[in-house]
Image 1 (tube, one colour):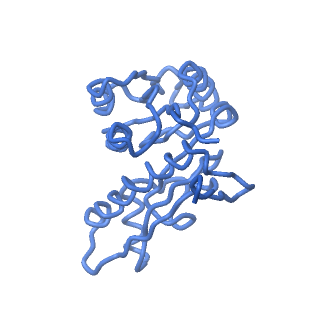
Image 2 (cartoon, helix red, strand yellow):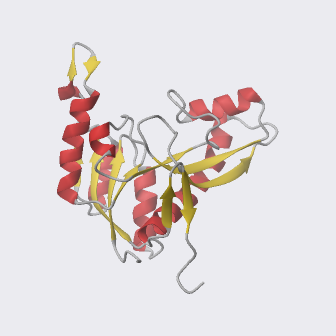
Length: 217
């Protein structure tokens, strides 16, 4: 059955560009969803003010109260985050540059989606994020890279893949030039994956995701 309005909770830690892109596509009618809540792990994140400017409900859940003697209590943070998210009643939680690994308390209660700037399982896992990914691609001499949208699980970048798109690596590429082209793909396929979810067209089958055809197709 098609979901006419899918409620989203978007998690950010920085500039919020992925969140803004998604909000714009929702407002343009491309994605049948609404952003019910934006949660940031940092009060100073630029994305918080951008979300407020867009008229979105925001909340900040800092890591600091969950850190003692330099040790971060991931489980306690996850429980607090899950309780906060529950207030928004999201159908889907969208990771948009959130720099804290989600714990079992979140992943057991909500479906969570993420985008990664490489063709998983290549260049995924702990420590592979942002420019580190593009630097690794160039250091390996790969001729192609890309972007991957996947459901999240307890490990980094290992959840079932929803969509992938290839981006060629060009002669003379730098991490910056490669990142620009990969990000352009991310801005397209991430909202597309959320649209498929909102339309009820994603079916998880173990470690795989099937995409159902459009109604009437």
